[in-house]
Image 1 (cartoon, rainbow, N blue to C red):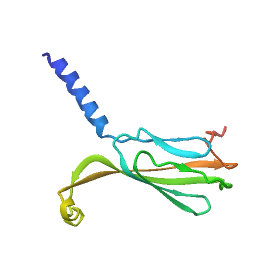
Image 2 (tube, rainbow, N blue to C red; image 1 turned 135 degrees about the vertical axis):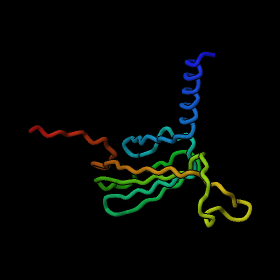
Image 3 (spheres, rainbow, N blue to C red; image 1 turned 30 degrees about the vertical axis):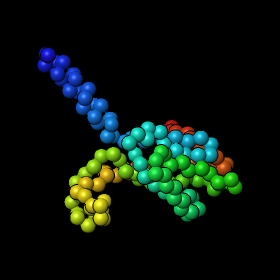
Image 4 (tube, one colour; image 1 turned 45 degrees about the vertical axis):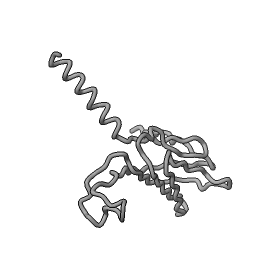
Length: 137
């Protein structure tokens, strides 16, 4: 096999291997819910949302994307901020033996965490996509 074929096959394999381990959820929404697509390889998710009035909402999901839904009543208008954490399928060596589990679960590795944060906007009681406004000057 030529060196070029080895390079192409090696690059393709690395890309596939990286894609299998790289979690890159994309925030999606409709008028009353926020969720994430591209949720491959993530489990045990926690999404913490801070509403404009100071209320903190926590949503947990053992598998699949967590989904935040506006309540049936009047939702507060403003910017909602979220933090999202989950476990990936990738393992890392535990450096602090206090964190290595208990009993039969004790081991030298732990799941590598995924973390992201972001925001969404509620206006007139629905989730909107804010317009990009540029000032002329």
